[in-house]
Image (cartoon, rainbow, N blue to C red; front, side, top):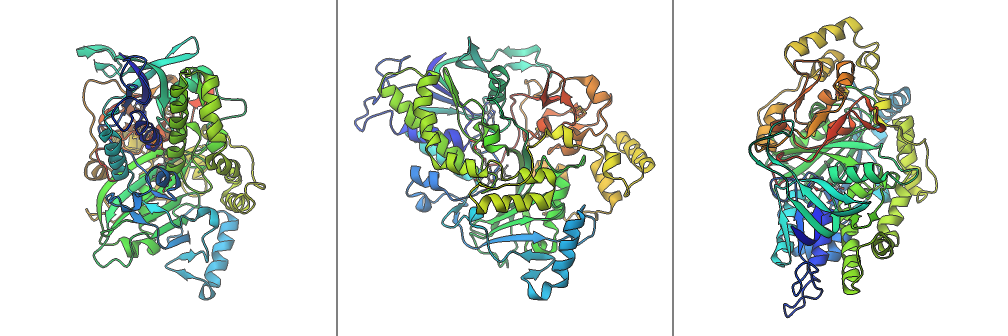
Length: 608
Ligand SMILES: Cc1cc2nc3c(=O)[nH]c(=O)nc-3n(C[C@H](O)[C@H](O)[C@H](O)COP(=O)(O)OP(=O)(O)OC[C@H]3O[C@@H](n4cnc5c(N)ncnc54)[C@H](O)[C@@H]3O)c2cc1C
Ligand code: SF4
Ligand code: SF4
């Protein structure tokens, strides 16, 4: 099939692109404002393929200053988007350890003791210090709290109502079609294949869609962006080494909640010092809350689910959450390299937008607005080129799209944030000071050193638990978990002293229940496994097997052989396994021993 423009992924970046583009393809009288090359006399034919089974099945916080969103929709505050609220009170909280198990450095322990000793003079309650002010770079005054799912469904409806572009959910793009360094379109995923991709009943090969421009907005772990990174390389000095997995609940707060819509809480310090948390209050007593587990958290038991529950149970938060009920749950990777990870933004026949192009700002904790902004910048560039009848060459895209991007606030703020998190390479205290320094000096000062690949940081289970759990005990727990085909982190955390989670069937539910009740996870049959263990021999001798421990959906289990087993029907497509593998890929040490390919299914909730 031939079209003019094909887009990969319908996240905020592509939504921004299509919103701006769709408004300018047709004149007020219905005649084409610019003409299609494949269907002369008609406006350009624009298609967008989205992997998830419906629009808005993504995961995000979301609190946003909404600068780019408001530029596209000046009336957005009055648009009646479900779950939207203006930002009200903002609090930043340092959570102290109420159970005495958190792995804290000597510096943090001293700081904690000092805080506890002087708490009568401080804004301290329920084992938490309320920072007296929110640093300007973190503030979201005049911004909005949104549900990403609800907002994306609303934005998708706006785009489709123009009748000028089509969005196809449930249609993963398998690969970009590259001819002599030029991207000429995309190939969709094969259907009717077995787990390994071999043709079986009802085999239908993925269709080739040729386009003059391929827009890649497939997010932080998108397979098309990564394919181009492999084929064209990253620009000199760029790397993708900083990640986080964000895991989120949407909950009904108790009827007597004192939290007002628009409340924004940001936390750090607990359950482990490296883990950041958020709680945003929507109208009607609904809240979005969750944690980020970053790649620089040097733990081989990086389970986001269990840590999320301990975070919710922190006394400062639990007094608000007790009696609440789970509505929705999900997880997703954040690309935290920012400008460090900016790939080639353009090439002949393609342009990259959004988080996969390095937009997310880790200093301000903002990604949606940035992704959306780069989409709108590309759309303006595309209209300019279409009107001038110029082809989508790298040079033309650089002179229009990249030029706009470099001149925008996304670039200016991205530069300030560029090194702001490097301090976390040296520890949490250095990391926090480094962030404050970068924020207060507009990025002129920062601390720390360049990030290293996540797999280089991960210690063995035995080393991590030295002094807490003996090697013999670990070996015993390993055997027991292997017999049950279960991950190890639960047993290790129990043994290390983390209290058991008091499941209540409402809010504190098992991981499996979260998949079913909150994520409503499904996967249609007839597709290949999208998670593939590249070098099974490396898995067989892998000690940490962190892919199993970190899996957000319990989709990776120890398996019967030495190689983990993958269950496509439980996968939430968070992408955490991609960068949470503890072994380097021998062919490319910047990559790990897991391939995360295009796939179907996943979460079936549009509330996250
Ligand atoms: C838990 C969590 C909390 C967050 N909180 C905030 C917040 O409070 N404020 C904020 O501003 N940002 C927040 N973010 C970050 C924000 O969500 C991202 O920066 C933003 O979503 C990036 O938009 P994007 O369009 O570039 O990519 P994405 O949102 O990742 O969208 C990419 C889309 O491409 C699709 N796709 C991928 N591969 C394919 C394929 N092969 N074929 C077809 N489709 C494909 C995906 O399904 C997805 O829909 C948060 C993120 C998480 C995970
Ligand atoms: S995928 Fe990576 S972490 Fe998992 S067992 Fe294999 S080598 Fe180890
Ligand atoms: S297997 Fe699926 S759910 Fe598990 S970490 Fe990988 S992408 Fe996430």
